[in-house]
Length: 271
Ligand code: BJW
Ligand code: ZN
Image (cartoon, rainbow, N blue to C red):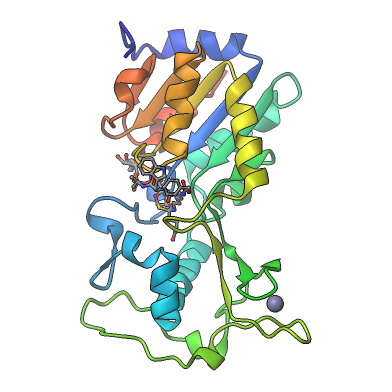
């Protein structure tokens, strides 16, 4: 717990100016102003399902058709969305200061909006909606097809009255490698799955050496990401949180800036 927390933007900007290594750790809240629902709270449902009950290996094993419909819907929504002022403020900050400081964006989001805003040094902790992984040969490929396969065209509507999902497995996306033809899955880290080792290592290395960290639009409840910023704060890094409401981690941080990050970030990251 921090003895005295501040919301003094000028003080934060002084610390940011003096910093050498900056990490920006983002979550679903940064994409909320682009129209992409967050996970926790009212928007976190698709049909009658909580997103967290579909984002599991068990759900995919039991009903790959249903899980693919869910991800097809999310791919289409994110493809139509545009990066907002928060994503752009981060990308602009990197392009302005990326030669004099090491700036790393670690995102829990899978929507690709940081990259589309122009962020270069990006770590996608939980994967990406536009990557697939073969369940048989494990090949990971970028796939931006819309729809990802014929059978998913016009599927995925979020209407709560739609029950079940019955696309035959053979009609779902499959690996095109000769002698494989395995079922593809979204290249996303589901609950109970481990994060990719190399990705986690890169993120931990950036967290271990940053002197300033911005925690943006995350509820800080999903591990391991939830412990990154509190750990950085406890070893002396200056951590600032940007959220519309306090989170369980808020008391650990030096600065707390309440409000939509499409408004707070452009101010915090401007010269
Ligand atoms: C705004 C805003 C605006 C809105 N401006 N702000 C230790 C203790 C207990 C449990 C565990 C543990 N270690 C691991 C676990 C298990 C589990 C876990 O953490 N469970 C917790 C829920 C308790 N973790 C895992 O399973 C991870 N694997 C792992 O650690 O493997 C090893 C292991 C396994 C089991 C036990 C021990 C070790 C993998 C986690 C993968 C998470 N995957 C998901 C789904 C991706 C699929 C998909 O997208 O379809 O990733 S879960 C979901 O939550 C998604 C998100 O990336 C993630 C984080 O959510 P986020 O981004 O914080 O969003 P919200 O909605 O929660 O919050 C939005 C915030 O924005 C809110 O605060 C708003 O106020 C704010 N906001 N508008 C600013 N305009
Ligand atoms: Zn394959």
